[in-house]
Image (cartoon, rainbow, N blue to C red; front, side, top):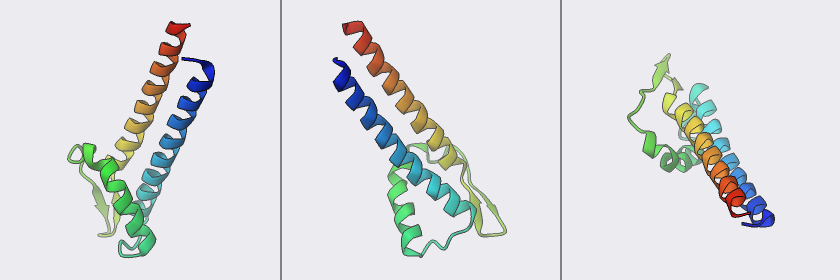
Length: 101
């Protein structure tokens, strides 16, 4: 794999990870601060992140404070898991590139 292709691949991985992390981070913040789930922006973020959280559903339970503020451990775990997955894919791509040189 040439260095230009590797750079493009690593850049794409970082962009995708950045978008995923941003959406999950915003979801976490909205839940913690008890954002109105019927507000259009909040609804968009929640709906957009459901597929990202699906593999992690049921691992942890969410904690609710004062009936409105939700601390979602699942979202935090997903943020860490996606970052780790991106790191592993990046390292694998660099390892393949070095082994072909």
